[in-house]
Length: 112
Image 1 (cartoon, rainbow, N blue to C red):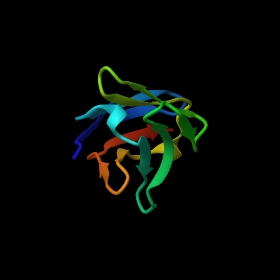
Image 2 (image 1 turned 90 degrees about the vertical axis):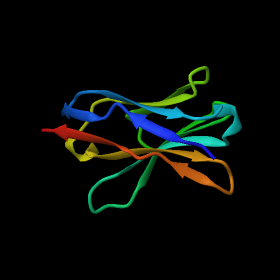
Image 3 (image 1 turned 180 degrees about the vertical axis):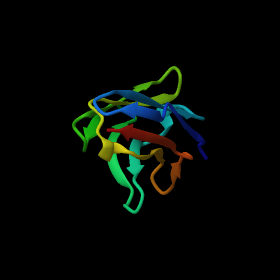
Image 4 (image 1 turned 120 degrees about the horizontal axis):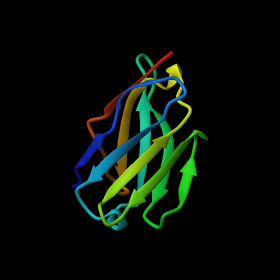
């Protein structure tokens, strides 16, 4: 099992930046990949970025950057040039192969 706790969300003006954190209860090296997703009201959850246990990254949203601190078992999502349409609940995900785990989410609201 793994527990995930997201933090860092809040209210920000358009054009601003936020850094989200995801604290993970076990070593990042023991997890195939970590990912950040978001879900806006009335929309499906969408993938933003992933980082593998080897450190390889994949981005779906070019304005967002995923990184990690393996000593702290924490994964980050740096979000720049935020837009009102980025308003959503942001989730981190741990992919352990047959099992996947989700955090509780953190709300990001971007005002125009």
